[in-house]
Image (cartoon, rainbow, N blue to C red; front, side, top):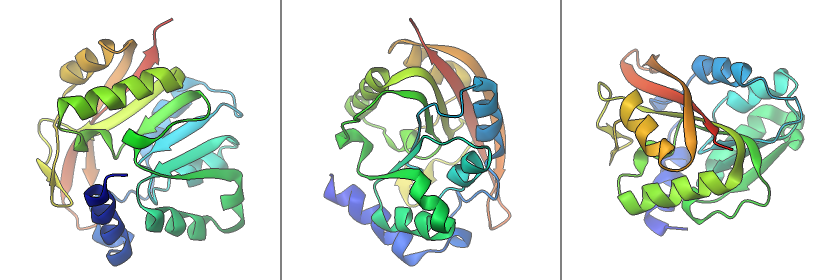
Length: 205
């Protein structure tokens, strides 16, 4: 695991509450709507990449999905999510690791990422991520990133902005076809707004 990346995110989650970070969502509405449209069986394997202490897993469990994994580089973030879920945390597979160094042990029907991909600005890292995605997904992927109208930094780190066209072109090069892309305005806990683009892709047969 890249030490600088691990140290950065571990420090964030050890020192800031959910109300003190911009990405916190009370309800991950766009992600949930896209997951519902994916029409997966309730036992379909789903992984949330960079899920941290996101509440997406809470909602998936409430909707009776029973094969959910959450991967994050920060152990503190995962521990926070597990504590919030209480006994229900035992229904989730928690994976501590850097997605770029992760070796999945199964294929996923759905790969969700609202947190990690736009931090990968180096083309080699982008390709490594996309190759892993292509190898690990037998179904669909939902990717949310800052849009071209969104921030250029998050948590002190520069990010890569996308729009529907640039994201679709990149993912199509790695064996995915676009099903839909939506723009979304996220309201942060501080009352500011951030522009995102979410795209849902399907692995080409």
